[in-house]
Image (cartoon, rainbow, N blue to C red; front, side, top):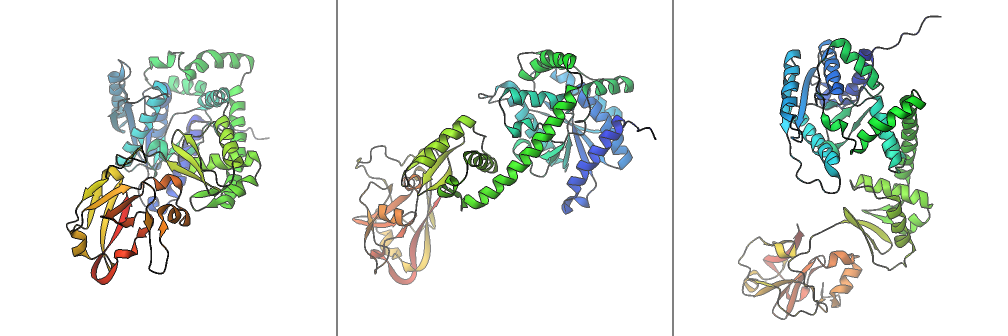
Length: 472
């Protein structure tokens, strides 16, 4: 029997990089262009090994290689790390560029997460600037094991336990929809990289923040992982296999969510009656998928369960609101909506009985007038049927949000109805009504945004004026 040859680090890297490059070039727009790849270079052991492997691959395959370094300024050694990376690339003849970034808003995520977010956004920008569509990072087998264990400790589901993909697009992270991020060293252990760097005599820097056990990943790396390695040798490969199983399960869940979404989707909302026909697990799976498609933060299981209880068990005509960090989840006429969190408008009156006037104005023939306090622009459009322009210019006009009791007649053969009736007939949700202004002349309602013109002052002729509201 022929002895099986153990693949070298270079061959593992080349196979993974070629597969990722083929994925990028499968897009016809990129196939004719010379291949360009970039490495994310911190200067540490892992990324220094990645740089050398990528350099050898680029020379062998006629690929243009770039190295990008992100300078956070968090360490007193940051300037020397940048200089080291620049010198290493110059020695290999690799095009190099660094970008300085600052952490301005760490919020509740902390320094580690904030630095990661700004770093990847900067890398995506550098790739876009140089026409690079494949970015290589130095994540390896031990990183994958750490990721799976960290997600397990956080109580994550299959999506989190899937760990890192060999290659994926992450436009929300990289701020670059054209970019694919690949991890060609994912099957390689840190021990193998140590040996490669020592054999090739590759110089590298040491980031002292990696020794700080206050960071969760460092605590795992320096305290938990060595104990696991001693008790369960080779556990990293088994963790990686578990991640592959979780990835497979997640793909099945995504397929099911797509089918359920197609069943329940009604325009930009979900049909609550159809949601009730699904099991609780399928409802939760569908909603997580919907949140992901809308690029919203994933809710916790507890939050999701409470939201489903409120939204599914309330009576048909209930106007429910559940607040999410990124949006509002609302129910209207047995439909579920995800609506943005909008700032309060200056024109909104907290006291609905306040009789102070709205914003008075005179139309002088403009095609449009902006009203920021009411969140939009009022357009004056020419039409065969509308308001007489001379009459309109003579009127002191008022724009305001409705007070209640306003009535509108849409056509001569239709009755005069309250604004609220028109909203209901047009299925305008309650949360939108409060941001739809009305325009009046003295003793006469002329226009209601979302509904239309009152017919009492409309005439037929040339260059008549009709009003149109555009929210901004």
